[in-house]
Length: 65
Image 1 (cartoon, rainbow, N blue to C red):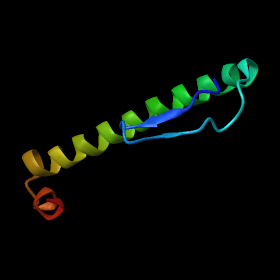
Image 2: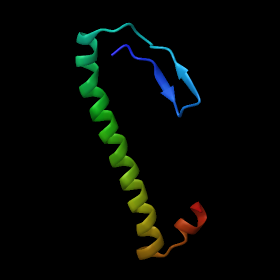
Image 3: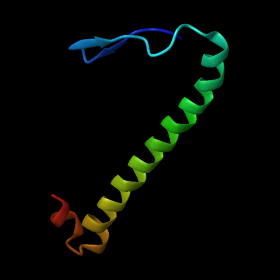
């Protein structure tokens, strides 16, 4: 979208590319899939940690903490 990126209100990064609607339309679905995939990986990782800590009780969660 050619917009600057604000980072937690600390500073602003300039736009990496000029405004290009066609490019944005191509990249948005990729961005969406990667975001969902990342959320799934984080969720599975948390679930596995809880599984080791609450069901198997094998000490893996304690070692991670």
